[in-house]
Length: 446
Image 1 (tube, rainbow, N blue to C red):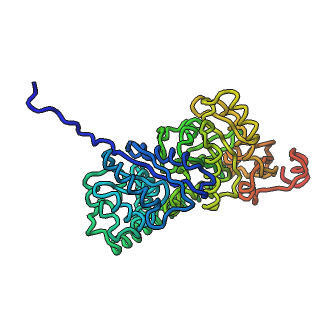
Image 2 (image 1 turned 60 degrees about the horizontal axis):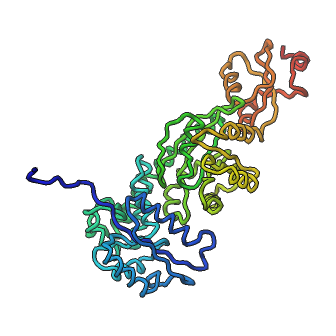
Image 3 (image 1 turned 90 degrees about the horizontal axis):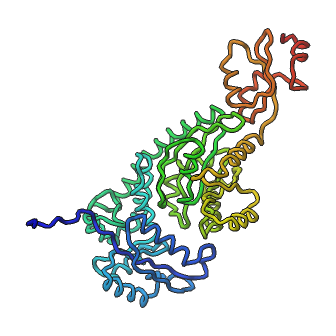
């Protein structure tokens, strides 16, 4: 028998209570559905939900969010069940959080949905820009809570766990308003430099006249899986909320041969923290500048309509609501035939796909091609032989209808979008028909 028994090194999952208020303001999401999503967030943060509490109120209590009696009951139950964290479904004010911490007692963390989402973003941010964006949001969240209301961070940064990834590891004595404000300024400056670089990359893509498609949607709707299925990319895919935060852009050849780019953006969620939207504005700019948005939703989710409404609201908030948008209902392989038929009758203009099985992808590809050609019109250009690269560009980015040669160069009639027509403006020759042989002879072009 061994003298010393081996001890597990993996930290035990924290035990968590989730708490919500059922009131008249719950117009889009029922409190039960919202708390079910909150539980998934807790699981994504490696927590274990061991209790759920709902209090029916016309509006949250100013001092403690829930009634003081309910708070005392939760504190008693938390102590009896060895609970580590109590998570509230709405954002708490600094005073509400401080009062609830006093009621819950020593050793029990009190956090809100916003802190939990920031914690998950902190786990999943892998690129330099992603980490800066998350750090900026976290510091903006911490700033109004520095008056002793996060004293548990001193203990929890050593212990780790949900809600402890804030302040970049500084002790509570170091985290004062001056330091946090200085850190916010530094992060904003660095992020602005990265945004400028991203803007140059975006400008380069615009200059190439490639048709730009952006995938937007609720978190875990299968955007990355769809990107991989459409382009053969190998973007990270995981069945969890906010699995990927950093935008991924890949080349896509449309069914008419036209070149396009498709970008996977960060997923949305109800009650998405305002400071996260602000911090990720450069990432979300990919959605604002896209020629076409594919709004990806989980057809199998019971809250499909609520998720679509949430995504549309965020798009409106970031100024992207005016872009052409196609609703794509993913994960249709999980639906029974009658349920799929019902959804088809409700969403006549939607595309129904399964990124996992490949079902519906051909139809989606045709839809993207059709949307890309909506602004096309026919033009005829004369390309001198000395500019042969333009002929290659026209074949890659436009739809060639007719092509012939003259003494002066290549005469091409093609369908092109507005950006491409502007690019080719100096080479354009006006003509009454797509077959330009006679026109070219009459005008001395041959």
